[in-house]
Image 1 (cartoon, one colour):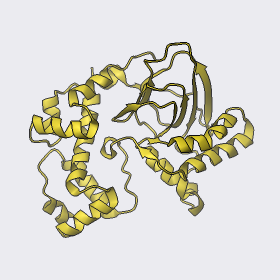
Image 2 (cartoon, rainbow, N blue to C red; image 1 turned 45 degrees about the vertical axis):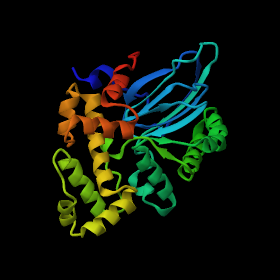
Image 3 (spheres, one colour; image 1 turned 30 degrees about the horizontal axis):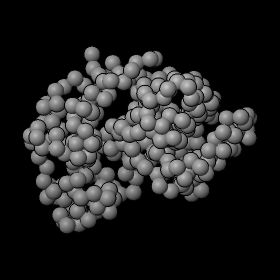
Length: 295
């Protein structure tokens, strides 16, 4: 049985086909949401769980006093808190909504381009800043107490505020996700697809430059412009995304994963993995295996 079957659950949400969104406002003594996924978007506002652990895709981080995260469809996510004494209540407001709540024809309208970008970026998980939380948390609390069409208007307003907010942090390695999030460059999309399909072997930049009919210098410039990374850094990100997914979803040995993902030796794999993930592959896998199953 694979690790994903042991530790990551497909949640069946209570959303029905005719629902625009559902909101859950809960206060509790115990705060623990093991890693799970579902086809709906999910916005999580969490208060008073400071010091716990946030897991989104292949990202692991520490929860602040206030937390606001948007996750896209089928992106792994979970929250845990081990430090609360049980004397203070956690407050969690969760908003779930279907991926097609607005529809492509509506999202392609000029006025909704910011929402379209928000939903695209949510495929990597978005952590919003404390400043953004301060700006929208009253709206989140009010939304949990509103019904009918007014609630849908407030829901749209909340999403717009999040869409235009600054200092958004994308949590998941781009290549960890199944979705392709390059929407503005056919060439870089072609490069990305090629790297995902061939990352297990040695790849020379000249080979990729020929693929998109560009010089090496032009390809290097394009990669930097579109990804913020050099070509080699971009290739490493693709390989690490594949490696983290294998560490979570399979029982393959770390050595096998290393070579299957295109790294040439274990030492190099461990060094690069720790640089980007702040832990070794073994520690990363152990963290996911340690998630409690309470579903």
